[in-house]
Amino acid sequence: MTMTGIADQQEAVMRVPRIGVPFLDALTVNYGPPGLLGRFFLQADRKLRQKGLTLEFMQFSELSALNARFLDTEGLIINPMFDPCLADVPDDAAMCLAVRDEDGELVATTSGKYFDASQRSFKEIVEKGDFLSVRRIDGQPPITSHITAPIAADLRGRLCYCGAIWVDPEVRGLRLPALLSRIVNAAMLTLWNPDYVMGFVKPEVLGTDLYKRYGYENAQPSFEVHQGGKCLYEGIFLWMTGDDATADLARFLDVLWPQIDAAVVARHR
Image (tube, rainbow, N blue to C red; front, side, top):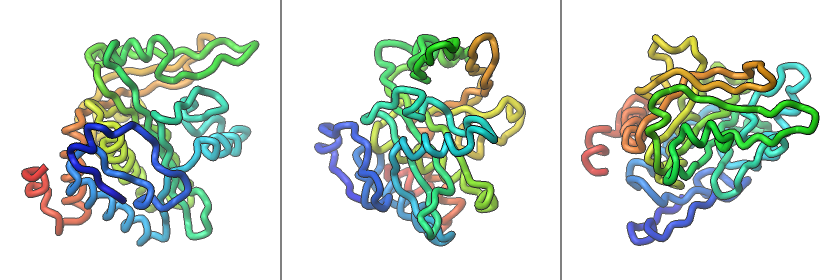
């Protein structure tokens, strides 16, 4: 893992890290507080290695193969916006993380995507189909998306979405989702310097604090995906500012690795 200075940050180009090498070797800290992010990435990588797991960036084609593997029995298990067989996935504005076991087998994954909302709101991006970017298949009705969360009309600037968390049932007892969501959030913070970080959860968590396990404090209904009059997905929209995401990483460090004082880290950001 390398870090750039302030001058380098101003010239940093959005690029996805190297594929298929250890996570810490692939990542460059371009934006955000290098001390906090560096400690978080080191501790997160160490935490996974203690469980016999390794972390790396992977090709979206492998994610597509994962989708295909489960298609007949479970349907799509990964958000189609990250499957290059179904959607347009930009090389310079999307990334995919892989967690592998000691045999190199994929046991968990999550993805992130960047959106330039400088000229339009997130609601407009969703309603025009540019959020999912799913291609229309001949002979099938188009897939459309809609968002009614009021905040969506106000979100502009640099937006990042974290989603497509999948964990193999064999390792679900390791409680990986909360850690993975923060790893991808931290990676998006340093790669793309977002104004806002976003996600979705199932509607039944509204009214509970379950979504806060992923670091979010804000939730509004709803986001829906439709095809041919059928609702394929309904979710609760989650969001936080880039500063909120950074503060969440400091709190998360303090909970998992209390030798790191989150208050001190926050003061020295």
